[in-house]
Amino acid sequence: MENLKLQYLKSFFTRSQLSVEECACKLKEWERIIRLCYAEPVQHSSDDFLRMVLIDACFKIEHFLRFYNYDRWVEIDPLLLQPWLANDVVFDLILLENQLPFFVVEGLYNLAIPHHETLDLPSFVNVGFNYFKPHNQQNIRPEKVLGVVHFTDLLRTFMLPSSFDRRIRERRVDIVDHLYSATRLREAGLVFEVSPSTCLLDLIFHKGVLTMPCIKVHSSTEIFITNIIAFEQCHLLCSPNITEYIMILDFLINTGKDVNILVEKKIIVNLLGDDDAVATMVNNLCCNVTLPYIKSDYRCFCDQLNAFYENPRNKYKAIFIHDYFSTPWKIASTVAAIVLLLLTFIQTVCSIVAVFKKGILAMSYSCKKMRQHQII
Image 1 (tube, rainbow, N blue to C red):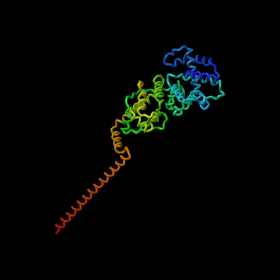
Image 2 (cartoon, helix red, strand yellow):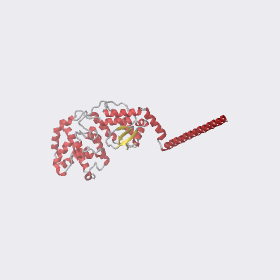
Image 3 (tube, rainbow, N blue to C red):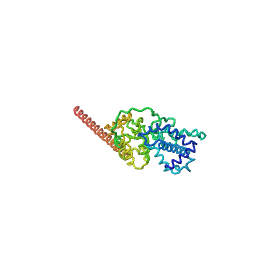
Image 4 (cartoon, rainbow, N blue to C red):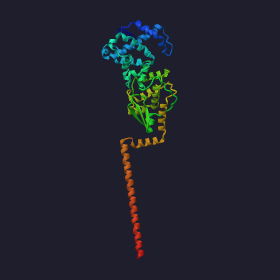
């Protein structure tokens, strides 16, 4: 990859007609700000540090541009010729430890644009959106995204509600330490339904029905979610929206049986093929994660689900439905039994009525005989 990065670097300078000195000078202006973006002091000299930033930034720009003009590059680009390798690069670009500040990559891109305006290239945000398009399930528009700090943050943004305001940090004061699993909730009569919403955070509970958006679980899901959670844990101004969602999913899923329930309802699309593997993955996502507080909406949501399970009436109703109406055969036999019982009841009533009428007639006849004897 190091040799490939140098090839991309050369291609970038050829494409933009920029000089190394121009880019190095601009990076020198930003160096102090760039260093402050990292959690710990960067133990490199100025020249070594800026060299690494320049190579990585230009590689990302050139790679994104080649992917943007896919048809032109697919038969000559070393990465695009090998889809598995290009896929590995996507994973590397997701990793939190591999991030460059977004303003650096965008700044170098904008610096290069005046040198080739005739190519009619889009903004770097548009190029980045095109590259990560498969992750943009909500089709969020580039102009709606402001203040992204790096690519991991961009991917997190794709998962947030379109109306989410990044500038406002929501206050979280509630704690959730328990929520019944999907299996237990269904035993209590809870109905799971898939939501048409494309935002994973749209969890709705209403009148015994829990509606959840569909989530696809594949081989890269763990890498994807883990890095977003790590970002939310590290960034002081970042609300833990995705962490809260995963925590609730972790409560709902304890075993492969819980996963199977959600798969049946199309809430989870299991591309791993093994329900137990999905359960293990979800449970591992929250390991070593600190979430002391949760927003009040989720606290209320969890309390409602727990209260539904703990209501005895819901349990007895669910047991009755499961024992007598869970399958077509049980429904048919239950209806037949009810009809037979009803007919037996009607027959009994008719027999009692007939006996009662016969008794009345006998009494009436006896009384008539007695009156006749008295008259005589």
